[in-house]
Amino acid sequence: MALKIIDHGTKEYEQMIKLRDTILRKPLGLGFTQEELDSEKNNLLMGAYEDDQMLGCCMLVEEEPDTVRLRQMAVLNDLQGKGIGKALMQFAENLARDRGYKRITMHARKNALGFYEKMGYKKTGTEFEEITIPHYVMEKEL
Image (cartoon, rainbow, N blue to C red; front, side, top):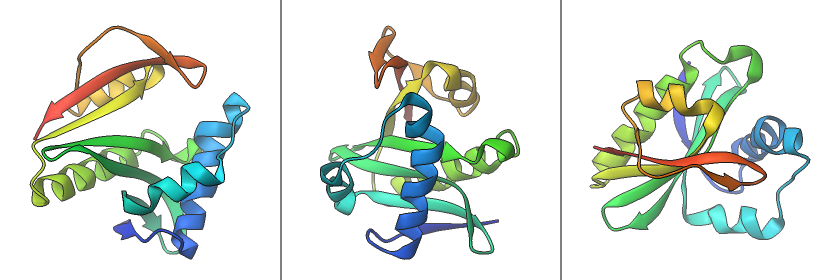
């Protein structure tokens, strides 16, 4: 498996949109707006690949000079639990550290709490609803 940074607007970015749409949005009856996708130009986009197939992806968005937010973590359904998400998280954390960030935050879906807790993330508030499903703010010091 190869982990790499993806450039906005490329063929790899199109794969990323398709994967996120399939895993994160379509099951909720949602999609992406062009405005949302355009706003990702300055984000750090990452993908996990086997040959030319994207297995998983995520992105980091700067929130403060020392903090980034993990967003849009997605792994193909039939490959979940096989270490792809863990590898992507470690890659994202290392990239964030290398760029001088001290903390990663996220809005984690309630059904993914166990995964993020195993990765060392802690809940920092109470449950809230986002895109029609329960989430928690989680964070980790790098």
